[in-house]
Image (cartoon, rainbow, N blue to C red; front, side, top):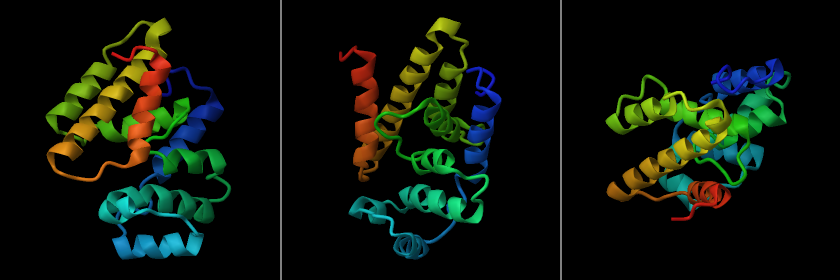
Length: 173
């Protein structure tokens, strides 16, 4: 992705660092995440408690920053923090990690394989950023559809991130 988007050396390093550290707390229990939230004074919601997988982005961002202060600056931390839900106003590096995490080759669900194929269909260079946003909207739709089908809570940050991309795209229908 770094090559596809012609990232600078600094941008590539930032994205690579975030990619290496983004799941640093993924294997922790919900109780461990709550403890980390208290230690780092991280606000969390009922949605986080009901959907513990969301915790690891928040706690991971803070723990990575503490354990690796030279490597994990505020930009890397922000990329890590939004890699599970997205956010309004996502920058390019946030978008790339969000998409890369959801479409990595170990994700074998048919819809994610199709999304990965859709993204890498080699869009025209001048349409690359539009293609990225369209792919992200599809990914949000897949995620939201899955959460609806399985009767799970949908984080409002995910809904807001999707809506933001659609509004910025300018095609609302």
